[in-house]
Image (cartoon, rainbow, N blue to C red):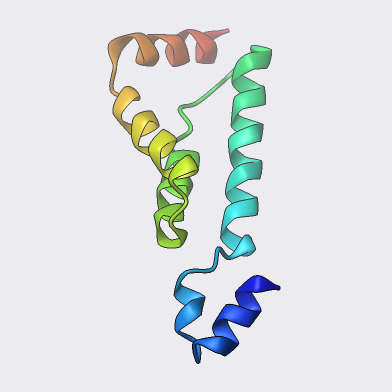
Length: 92
């Protein structure tokens, strides 16, 4: 509601500053699904590359709570220990 008021009050310029739910909610669902799979010890895990890219896309709505983990995920995916973890998970 406040986003609509800001958009009307600023003749559309306020839309830049409102947080669109259609970007944030799906990314949050992807984050939760990925985390539950890793924590549950599911077999055949692959690195969550799509989730980290989606987290990076939230920079468009100034959501640093998802952007920072997206950057960290992409950085740590090249770590040898992380690669070995996903390799062990895929073998089992």
